[in-house]
Image (cartoon, rainbow over all chains, first blue to last red; front, side, top):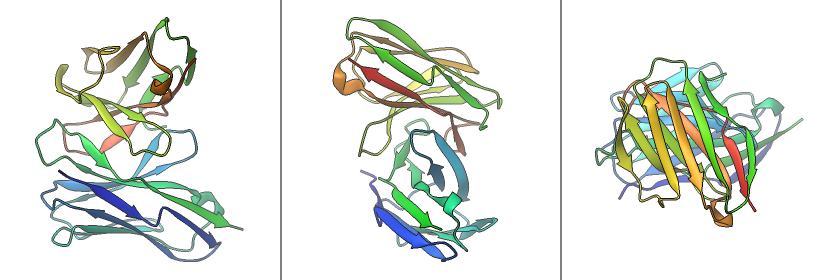
Length: 114
Length: 112
């Protein structure tokens, strides 16, 4: 059974800091891994999708890496801003041919203080 | 805007009511999903439709009934719900299973 874990559960940093969010998964047979952002009470915004053949993806101040063999991904946020405050979720497709079912971690709640 | 629109954004219903949640995607995708997000729990898949056929039903109680009349629209029909069904219901779509998923803003459901 695929399980996804995110640490830390919550993180508070001063504005301007670089930070790393962690995601681990138990079954390395994944097609891809997706990072999302969720603001309170809102839906999910896709940030980055890394294919299983890729090592990393970049979008602006965000960089996501993937190490399939060790079952880990990291999301690096450079020069954090108060607007980055949100919950960050990682997800992988189920390895059991379940029609694209995504399995999510619990999320990391990030607070960036001005 | 993600290209996936959900209505209503908020819904309060009694346990004997019948209501429906609507989702529409403008991305030309072939797969659509319903997820449930309860407080302090990870998102859980409820249903998957691919090319308008249900391909996954994640052991969801029959008081939730999905409908996918075409590849752009997805409904979740609700009847005789319980207070523990109160949650954020999220719709998503993707070009095909296992490709990048895009989510709507969700419907916040409260059952009283």
